[in-house]
Image (tube, rainbow, N blue to C red; front, side):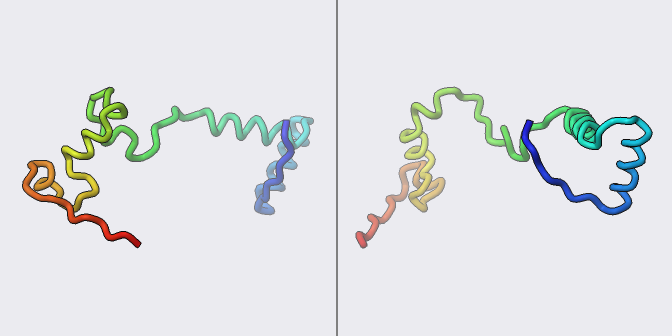
Length: 94
């Protein structure tokens, strides 16, 4: 186990100490048990936005250059670049 520090409101500390005495258990045991129950009580959900852009394709990583070229990503041309209607201006060297 690893040691950590938590800060409690005075009221919560009193309640925790009362519970410790009632159960005749160390404070650390009660905190660990309560923390475990809290963290594991709800099913885990994916982070916001995860899967929002799922294309259903599994080959995107292999075809990344082709996909970016076809969509015009990074060219400033958007849909025009995807349709082949615009050319991106060459970048200036610094």
